[in-house]
Length: 382
Image: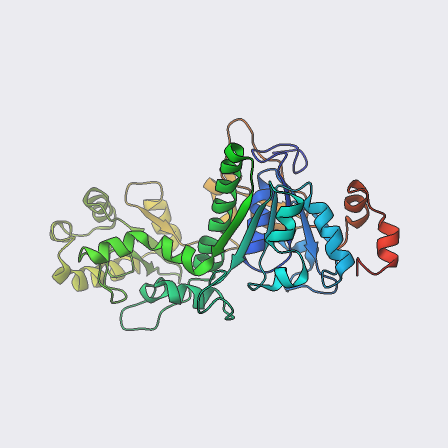
């Protein structure tokens, strides 16, 4: 990494318009910018959904910024002018809002038939819940994902907003956009990508629906191999109040764990005997509680025991592995994850710092053959 965003990276030359929103839309645009796409974020005047100052919001990194009051017809005309040279547009309004304001798929594709129009919603563009408000937690509740996350006999636990907003939302929006771009290479035509967080979260659950249908997965929380039901796939408190994550699922890995922490041959032999799980859990909890996290890390990390210390946000960037891989970077004084994944031939550049709203108004409009001063005087830029 080293050059300005867009100079390098596998998506160099891709032009993207991002209509500012919250959650998955900005994250998706960040991912595209990270990999070299030229992304223009279009903010609405006087609006900021983030609690962070724009210059310190990592999800705004890597793109230029323009402010347009899209409630005005003359501002929509500017947007449609930009659409003419764009490859992708990303929007996250409720279904029908973009159409009502004049920049829905029909006028955009009329201006640019090669455009991939990416739409990000919670429930999709149609269906009984299409117009309903929601957030990550409600989307993954509908998908069947939230039900399986939590301790036995307790309420479901919100898994941050990783499953709906980012895993089921942004990642599937990007997947759909890149698939549409690939197809455009054959047909020469763009299309609309309808990405719904609830559907993306449901698709992430595909393996579990398969196990459930085969009778190999209980619909009760905290009773399965991967939901904290198995004592050898869980986190345990250490002597200093830290936690050790143990994921010794396969017998050979569990045998190595048992050797290193002092479990018995019977524990190894009865690893998958559910009747033995309560006693095994109690023994593992007592054992792990006997040493500090640092002591367990020194003994286990890097071995085939599949055990690692649970790191906090302040700690993860400084772990030797993350430091060696340069998995975190600092931009505008904010430590944040670096672009991923890695590319052998077209590595992405270090992302440009986040731009405040309107920072690039003049440059973007001039490049489009428009007069920034006249548009500002007319109130188009807010």
